[in-house]
Image 1 (cartoon, helix red, strand yellow):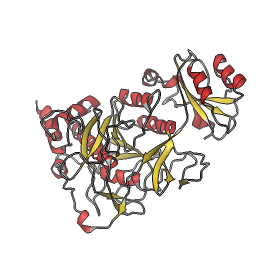
Image 2 (tube, one colour):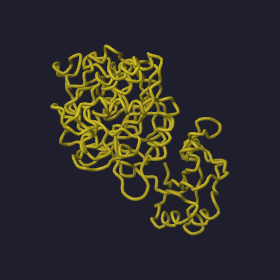
Image 3 (cartoon, one colour):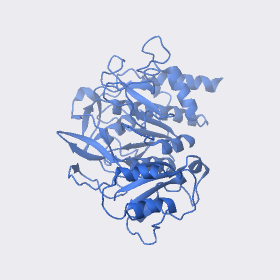
Length: 431
């Protein structure tokens, strides 16, 4: 992807700009004029010719009401024709225009990936996890429904892994990064329909949700479907590996997942942010307006901090619980955290049909996403479509509190209890 900026206008304009992904193979006919005042800044003052593209695709031929309400039609990706540095003063000049609501450089976000320890321990391959979520009892109500879809946005997926391949629908790879440092590994160039995993994080997360339970504990909802969306490549950083992806391509992954009919989006990732605007805000607004429940990891620095999208309104931010049901020492906390879930020494699927142990809020988030899918599946089997507001009500009133407060500053409403959540839902059906 060439250097680019994302510009959000205050008002919509009449311009026939294509979606940026559609011009990768050819730029013929793509407009190279935008708005007179902005054109003068970009071309005349800074000598930076460009192409104008929409940052988000339309779901249908025309913008839908939901897309318009979220303002997606007013967000453009200005792609520069030359691989040149984007000066900070250019961004400042664009921000100062009364036409512009927001502007940001298309940047790479980095996400810490918890270390996965490859393991074949037979003692960890028991049928159910003994982690206090009461999944075994919850499965007497439902093991999921194939009409419920969970989009997992992550590092990719071992598409042939026997624990998860039954659940995977057609996916997409949104990672496309020009690597001047030669630090990326695996597949980091080119958009395609094969979201393969190079580091195992996405495969590990997906097993927690949907594993068959062949050689590991069964997933929370093995009968639901997974929409696999690769939004992070693998980047070497010192002796460790982090997930990295263009923030706006992650946004496009969210938009695509919503338009594919996702009921739940799991994002076991989080990006720290400083400065104006908030990462993912407009597209998370779109997802929530569409009734999608968005779940994200709170972070793993053990501090009071905010990682996005978990810190955005409407998102369920999940912290990690230790083996005693308390907040894990590494779990990032704050008033935005909604729940905690088991996230220490979690055994799940890994690369090359393997298995691994890992700890992190990345492992806690899919426990909650799976739990939400379980609720939605049980409701669907009763002929009811459970909405996002109802899901949040049930979870916060059935979680196991860690103290005498209804909501704790560090652990939110407490640790998820799948059995009590389903009992409350069943009570609502009976009354």
